[in-house]
Amino acid sequence: MPNFDIIVESHLPDTYRVNRVHSLFNVTKEQAGTHHINVHLPLEEKSWKIGAVIGPSGTGKSTLGRVILGAEAFHEGFVWGDAPVIEEVGKGASFDEVTNAFSAVGLGTVPSWLRPFHVLSTGEKFRAELARLLIERDSDVVIDEFTSVVDRQIAQIGAAAFSKSWRRKPQGRAVVLSCHYDIIDWLQPDWVLDTREWQFSWRSLQRRPEIPLTIYETNWSAWPHFEPHHYLKLPNMIAATNYVAESNGDPVAHVAVSTMPGAKVARICRLVTMPEYQGAGVGMKFLEYVAGLWLRGENRYNTPMTGIIHTSHPGLIAALNRSKKWVLVSQRMGGENKNKSYLSTVKNETKRGIPKGERTGKAGYGGHIRAVAGFRYIGNREVVKI
Image (cartoon, rainbow, N blue to C red):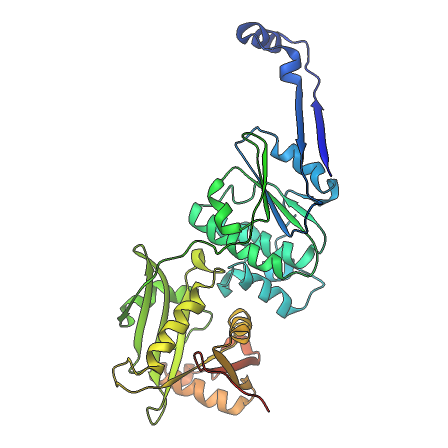
């Protein structure tokens, strides 16, 4: 069983300031120049995936972190270039692997993928680092200063998102070093070492804390707050019922629902989860709650309708595929009919009042063909495949 006995010594120069500190505060050179850590960590007793070393600054977390899983596992941060993060993360990985990693850790706002690391917000940088760890590290890793530079909301949700994603990896253990105790219930580590008293304890996997949501109907007045975080720019849906979820007064998520011809099927669109809540499964819970309302007939038509959502967002597609409450009903390539796309774009430009000579007819979405998947909500019903 590992017993770590670490002595870190530093040479103190014989200078006026150093000697005066010794004299004024009665600090011996041994106290100032020597840091001794002795701790027993029974990490071989059980198999584990995530551990946490938590404690105040200056107690030796980083010192221990450099030896706990070997020096090569210690991670202080990646070196980032000036290219968009979609190009920087997992250069040998597939596009789907990278975008799924972004979504898994809560970096689901697509425009952020096209920005260099240095212009991202602090919270986005934190999540981009986590996504890169998921893609590029298959071996053990020790993450220093985990969540130390982000606000506590992002820290807690980010810890939960990272824990969920890292546990899906087939190999590699992660140890996080942090001075914040509030992440423990969200990270759900298999063990915790508290450096205040150097006490070690195994933990059982538990449910993360609940995120209370208040969901209400509204109109498109709330959409401008969510729109910058949606991955498509489209006109508002006609005759839609909008829903917004709040948590303790903070806007969390938005979705809109209208009907398809015949008013027998509900069309679900404009699902957005705010960045600080991405990665914790809030968006899916909210989506399934609203879809459940329509399936039970709790809508303006008082008619039960199954809901269908179409999306090309890789993170949402992955989540819908994992859920037993949704069934994949269609897969197509959006934009494959160039003539149809041209005519549709010209029609939209005409509606927006663009003069005839200035209409381009250029299809949106960057001119690329998009893989669009359609899912039908079935709730708790089971699907029998023959």
